[in-house]
Amino acid sequence: MSEKDLKFTETHEWLRVEGDVATIGLSDYAQGELGDIVFVELPEPGTALSSGDVLTTVESVKSVSELYSPIDGEIVEGNAALEDDPAVINSDPYGDGWIAKIKLAEGTDLSGLMTTEQYEAHVKG
Amino acid sequence: MLRAVGVSSMDELFATVPAELRTDAELDIPGPLSEAELARHMRRLASMNRTTDDVVSFLGGGVYDHSVPAVVRHVMGMPQFYTAYTPYQAEASQGTLQSIYEFQSLVCRLTGLDVANASMYDGASAAAEACLMAVGITRRRKILVARSANPAVRAVVSTYLEASDIDIVEVPFEGGVTDVAELERHLEGAAVLVVQHPNFFGLLEPVFELSKKCADAGALLVSSVDPLSLALLKPPSEYGAAIAVGEGQAIGSPVGYGGPLLGFMATGRKHVRRMPGRIIGATTDTEGRRGFVMTLQTREQHIRREKATSNICTNQGLVALGAAVHLSLLGRKGFRELAEQVTSKAHYAADAVSEVPGVELRFDRPFFREFVVDLPVSAHKVKDGLRKAGIWPGISCGCWYDDMKESLLISVSEKHTREDIESLASGLEAVLSPGGVE
Image (cartoon, rainbow over all chains, first blue to last red):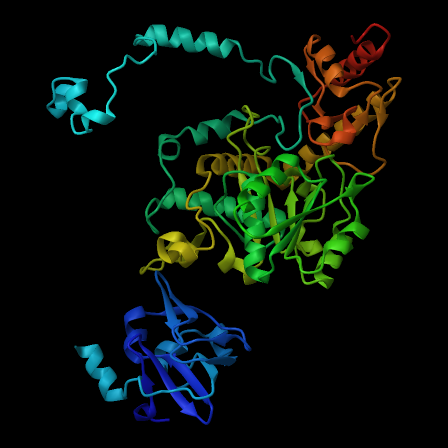
């Protein structure tokens, strides 16, 4: 589960693809900016999404952030552990803090997404 | 004042408004008055009012005339409360936040539900917001409203939803209470049923049955309750209401002319993030001292903007304070005693009035503080006749229910004496006797 295997978006989501299912979460940089996360609204399994659709919202004490789906697909599962402990996004954003799993639509093209190095440069720049 | 801002005339003050938008016509309003002249003018206007101090009033239907101790007004009148606006900063005005927190706590205790908000404009808008909340929770686009609920509340719910694609279906009543068979016909795909308990006619609704039917269909139950009734009746939490709302005017406020009113709303913990309005929470500061704070603000529009649960960002702080003070003065025992007095006087009045020839209690079901009687002539005529005797006998149901033009809704409170009730009965008898009504 190395960070190096991840793809990133400009809007601070990360993806890990295994077969035809992508696991998606919030980047370490984004969780640091948001502060303590107190609530995550999990998406319903079965919901169809297009790239750019709002996947879910993540709340800190005084702000709300939307997460966007980087791909077309269908929600397989939301991370139920976030209901009781949303702060795991802060402590383990790339591991236990995953947010949703999406089944990729056929022919999904991931080439527009950034690598870890590209994302880190994007965040610094 | 013109000099203080550095202009020489009213015209100069408005010089930045383009000339083509300004009028130079004389405004047709009277000239200025001195303080003494103004006071005299206002006193004359006020003397044209008739209040429940001048007449014997049996008006109810959502707004009730109770005795409010002077202490309530005194506390409300403290300038720190009286002149302050709704707080917007999350942690400022600890005293105000504490008083709202206490109000919320009292609403939770009365309704049996986990969380209450800081109050809303009135019971009607609270009911409308509860509908929106239910639509948000269930993602269904149809709501059911009991026709036995207060007509003004139903009208406000309609207005709120007018521009949306949400369907409103009215569930008829049978024998004065919501018809369960009719409810079942409409439950499929419904987000919510709004029922008033006790209802507009003062009757107790079959809330346990209604709740079960709703639950079976995946619809939520919103119960619009009379706060005083909660001293005697099972609270909304016990019959599975997802949201409780109601009109709090009766606790701590005068009748006014129908206002200001006080909406309250409470719900279970699982729905708290969908609840509109301000919510005050208790917390501790960095030194471990207790403090109060506006919480769960991520629901509100100053953070969520168009995705907020609601656009309401204020409350009825002063009126809520009055309610909290009144409740704390009554205490648990006093609150129950008040409710018991109101109920027994209402039942005494129902008996007295049913003795009058031609007057009949319309519904044969348990009631709380008000009841409907059928008259042999139009209720309006009877009201006109009794007004001359200094009695306002109640609300003519025909104003909202076309088939009830001879029905009168009579409401009784602890303020009514035996003599008041007897004068109502004898007044009715006089008006209904031959030659009594034109």
